[in-house]
Length: 412
Image 1 (cartoon, rainbow, N blue to C red):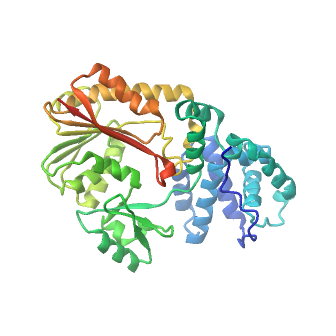
Image 2: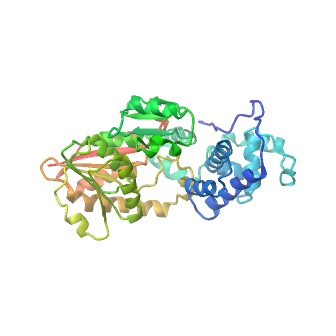
């Protein structure tokens, strides 16, 4: 049986971390918002840090890492704590497993370290509890991936995601950006298999750097960058990013196209397109136009016009649990089925924009499940025989980064 958990460091020396009540209260409050009010971890922490500007970088790092770790391992920790909503006690269990000395506070007087460690050891044979995956999600993943493959990917997704930058080649190059970031005391290293990608050697607040403010890079995982490279856009093409969101892939497309040609970035949410416009201005990406999809005519007007249409469709998000661990606690089969139906509708409705006689459609997800990936493509091809598969690829979290699927279809 595959087992493993990143919390198991009990053989190490105790961590010399001094815990202050305001920090612990920040952790507990964040967890309450995430689990009781269904908020997203990144947004909760962003608001918390804005409200507590007196906290230094070390405090923020401690809170952020603790919150993400507890969210990632919530089922295990709540099982050991024998409570689902006493977040102070759940956090105390987390500290015990991390070998962090608990202060002699009344809130911790009932914490039995020996009992927690003994129960933790006994749980090693229960994969889903020990590695903190809900039964409903595990059931779906095992049925689609098989038990051995699922457990391998589940373990990989319980690790912390690397911070990866995409170098904005409209303004700089990889070597120059590395030098400039180093002047701001941020060390990076190049990533193989992806052009213009850098990973941080040590986590840092890169949004405060002059390099970010000047638009020299964007945060974008290696897998996401590879989807854009997979598209192979050419400088003079007419490209449509039809599920653009806040525009990470649109900006990468603009860079590959050297700011030439035309990119239409579409979405059903105006606030996302507004954010995209801000990012495009900072990046110097001037060949991007935003279009709100608020009626079918917005799709029809581009019928058979685009050389390339990218459909990075809404999905379960099960390929990016490293980055968004709270997604697994929001998963349910009913929503999953509705999402798959939406994927089919988008494929059928938006594919009309692809030019006849060699136009390209790229379908992608941040999922590793077959039913959201190749099965959707096959379902689409049964109804649309003018398209043929040219190439496809799946990136799994066990390869080191986020999980993605991408399929390139040519229109005859």
